[in-house]
Length: 353
Image (cartoon, rainbow, N blue to C red; front, side):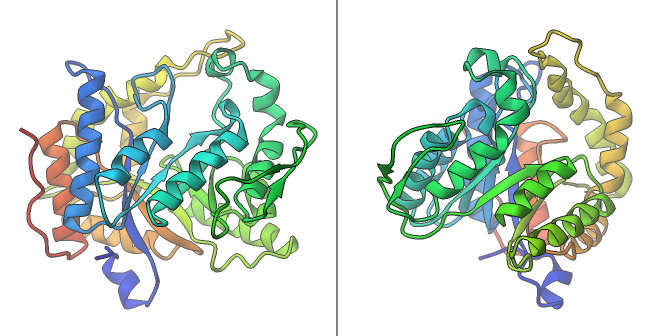
């Protein structure tokens, strides 16, 4: 069963709803618990009827303790039978695009086509030093990495390298049975343009409101058309913080109480050039997120998801449900969104012993 906002169904739009999981570590918990909880949320998503689950990837910070979204996706694909499982997103600046392409084809074939690959450029963090890719790869290498990854996943029999990744032609093994799409996490006009030139769908993040996302999608459509791509069937994905309460005020208070501790993990990024990382006002940012996202009563959540479903070209809504904190509370949120907001008929998800 696929979950759609009511207005999207009424308008005949093909929009489905997924979870977006951070596997964030909170004070008093452990990294192992954060990972186990996120895995349970993924299984609960299938039980109550979501279309899929997308996994974040981070290195060396507690905001998200999953360092390999493909490995997490493999585990979740193996313990589910129906849902799509995606990466939101693999950090391409830290990876060789062919190695990532091989993993993506492997997961797609073994899962019967349920794997979804999302990639991002990442940031100028110490990750680049640890993995030996460096700042130049971050600043100027994303285009070359994306181009090579696209060719590897296109279904051709052999692929040769490019100027940044030079190698002789090699067979693509395993060879994908179909072109495997790649979603590109975009926070800047330059990345939007790059994805549009390749005809790759966008992953739109939590930080942007609906108007900002609409502007990015309009820009995408123009650039894609100029490069011969039909932007209509692309199937962009849009991420949203989501939490349901008995009232708008109660849901907002839940998020105010739980989300700052999770967001504090973003302050652990270390810049490779050793300059201080900027620290946003977490309380002000939480208030912004509450305002622009489906946080509130079932009615308010439904109205905002209905609006999000009208974004041009968006076919996947990704809901970040860990904002209020706590395993049981998150499981309840997953269930309440499915039943009270999306109108699915489902039993409550099981609790972990």
